[in-house]
Length: 120
Image (cartoon, rainbow, N blue to C red; front, side, top):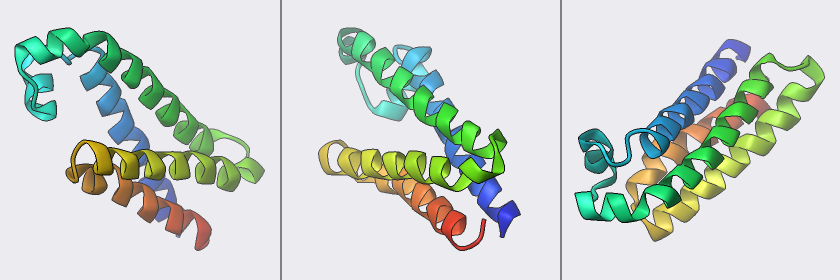
């Protein structure tokens, strides 16, 4: 179970690293606009906001990596905190932006959280 838990926590961290790259580096590029369904004009107007959002996603990724490489006694509480943050952000995003965020962000975080608490 620990391998599954670590794999899922790592996957959630990787998803957030990908989001960081999209929001901070590729926001105004065709791939960023396609993923977030924005026009060139919308992307240009919101680039600073997206970069700020990307930075916060970076903090989530960093916390999840900390849960994977940190001291064993901190693994569960650190993973729990950051996975709950990801799940809540995903719920908010699904309610305010797009329901697909439930599948991309919330579901992986909840699955990882379950494995952390079921013996990971």
